Picture 1 (cartoon, rainbow, N blue to C red):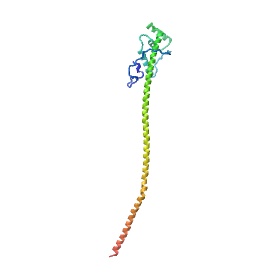
Picture 2 (cartoon, rainbow, N blue to C red):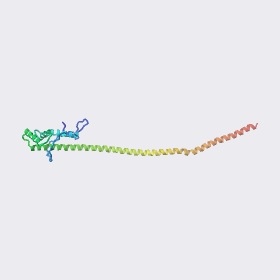
Picture 3 (cartoon, rainbow, N blue to C red):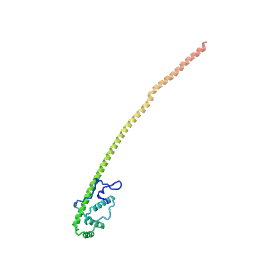
Picture 4 (cartoon, rainbow, N blue to C red):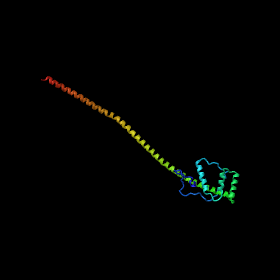
Length: 227
């Protein structure tokens, strides 16, 4: 049987785990009157289809059963009405007559007082679990905020690094373009000097040939004309 402390509890194995400190949590038993109670005119014939609502309703039903006071009281009267699936005058009269047969001291006022007691327990447990649930939500919100802040900071660092790398890349590209321009200018700056040297080398070849031709001509004339 589920107990009241299992309402907001889930674990990886499908069992329930208390969101509050791990201490024994029993259904409150102090008496508190609740004003403004409105008796429903009909009893639901079937559970709500929402699984979460069905689960919570079962917890509340088990909780009521766990604090059922000894003897015949409003809880037994309540269960008698619920079991019929109806809430008409005849049903209430029959249930009340049965209650009287079980305990001659039963009165309408006593049942009403008992009902107020059970309603007060529902309200106490409801408030307790609202508090526990809100604490869990606050904890999750804080966790979410911390994780978001951490990731936002990391994203900002990445964006800053990307901006820095883009700036460095732009600088390297500018340096590369400048080096390409300087490479092209090398030919232009060296060409005049290279041209002058090549012209002098060519002139040297021509001067050498011209000088040797002249010397050879004189040499041949000498050999031919002088015996």
